[in-house]
Amino acid sequence: MRIDAPEENQIIIELSAEDMSALNITYEEMDYSNIETRRVVWTLLDKAGHVLNRDIDPSGKMIIEAVPSRSGGCVMKFTLCHNESHERFRCIHPVIHKEGNLTVYEFSSLDNIMDAAAACSEEMIQGTSEVYEQKGKYRLIFRSKTGDSRCGMTLCEFGREIGSGDIVAARTREHWRCIVKSNALQKLGNKHI
View 1 (cartoon, rainbow, N blue to C red):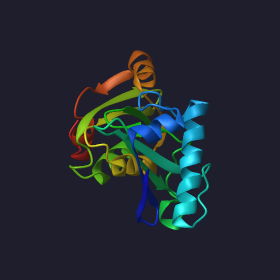
View 2 (cartoon, rainbow, N blue to C red):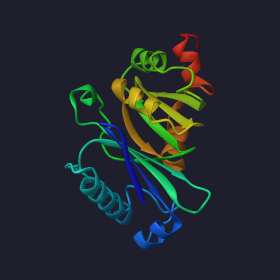
View 3 (cartoon, rainbow, N blue to C red):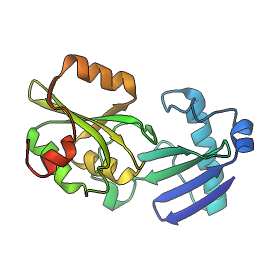
View 4 (tube, one colour):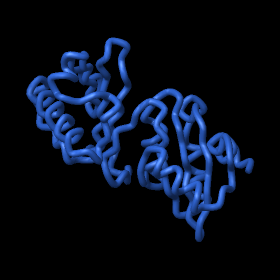
């Protein structure tokens, strides 16, 4: 296990296949709604706190990303949202973002979602995106190609993350009206619908 803190609010933990086995978890099983995944996250953050010699609140606001490694392990990146520059993030519950995961965000107005799209750079919005509407609220379904957390953090400035995975996305597609079927972030960021 390798623990690094390249930024004050970031912790990167590289887990080998042996580390994953010792923690009794696989990349495929990682889901923050699962108590075993939360146990692993808390254990990792506790170890990181000891190695980095600082207190890390595992129940605090954070974005967690997981990317599998070729050796059978994975790399987990924790972006802590506790200092002043991150107070504006309104992600309600922790979610593990995996490379290629579908994430659903909800916005209270079309202006908010357009402002969010405009605030994301081209490199941040690489992937697929769709927008749906219901009773004056808007949902964005986004799948990042890069696994970059900056886009998700920016989207949380203007709306809120409501969940991730195929089930949340399928519910939105089934019960909400589609208004932008593809490249929604690019189109809305350029104000072209």
